[in-house]
Image (cartoon, rainbow, N blue to C red; front, top):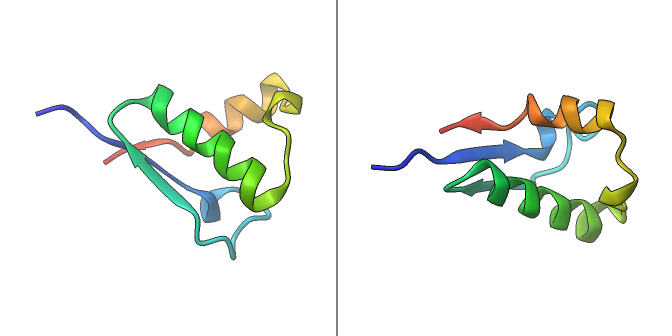
Length: 64
């Protein structure tokens, strides 16, 4: 059985009230869904995220 990964937006500093959460079969898929969520729910441009931001966000992706 393959491992699943999850990201809950509320775990991100400043996003505590956001109900967005994604689960997928790989970290790469979770990243794509996180980026899509950021665009749709928060009007963010993920291409503007610097390496520090991406490193922080990667710590919020958890094995389920």
